[in-house]
Image (cartoon, rainbow, N blue to C red; front, side):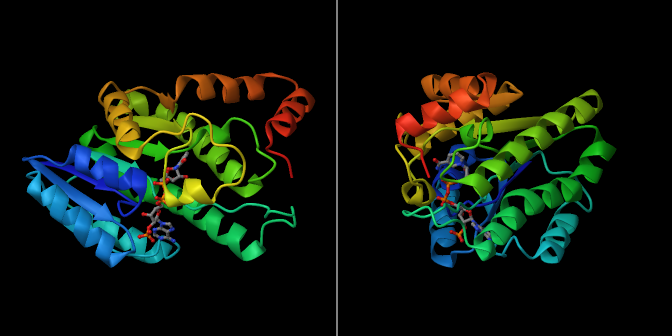
Length: 252
Ligand SMILES: NC(=O)c1ccc[n+]([C@@H]2O[C@H](COP(=O)([O-])OP(=O)(O)OC[C@H]3O[C@@H](n4cnc5c(N)ncnc54)[C@H](OP(=O)(O)O)[C@@H]3O)[C@@H](O)[C@H]2O)c1
């Protein structure tokens, strides 16, 4: 039985990933807080032949998160862990700034909980010399967008963390992949300020992510034009990149 864990399975990308991986011979551990959405995604995945186990906890509760994962990994490592749940904040329509409570929660969820998950699932993977961890970063991790400073910081952090883990753990047989989506239709994406070029549907994003993970690509970034553009922002002098972003409408 292939054991796959996905956090944020109640969200757009997480839900689409759950359905893509749902198949006979797969045990899906699906996480999310919204009970109704979690039950709905469970029903869809069971209909596709998967065994589904649900978990509903707030990722800010690191102790509960660690307990859950330690139990899951007690006798056997998970085969694939997709660290997907996340949140966003922005500086607001008048550029007032991000409320500290939101920034605090965002760092806890996007960065701290993600790293805590890796810490909890890794010992069993290292004992077995196998396993795969996929970390959801974002194209917003290449260069900071003025409208979403904390989000960009968290996604740049996850990108660097995943790259470092891959270099460290690859020789042990553990695959770590950094996923950098552009705009994918979801409640979080909808709430983001600024233009949203090359918007993808979640199932298209999930298909590409699954292909990238099966080929063990170090970085799974899409769509191509936005990937190139945002990558270039990190290469150009920062002053030039900021000017470009301002002209494109990502200004404070
Ligand atoms: N959509 C995009 O354009 C885009 C682009 C780049 C990267 N990403 C990344 O892709 C990932 C998924 O995003 P999405 O667009 O699918 O977002 P989404 O539809 O808004 O889903 C967010 C998910 O995170 C969960 N979550 C949020 N806060 C949580 C908390 N405190 N405790 C537990 N779960 C929590 C939500 O659970 P509940 O709803 O059940 O509370 C939900 O399942 C995120 O890491 C995001 O940063 C998205």
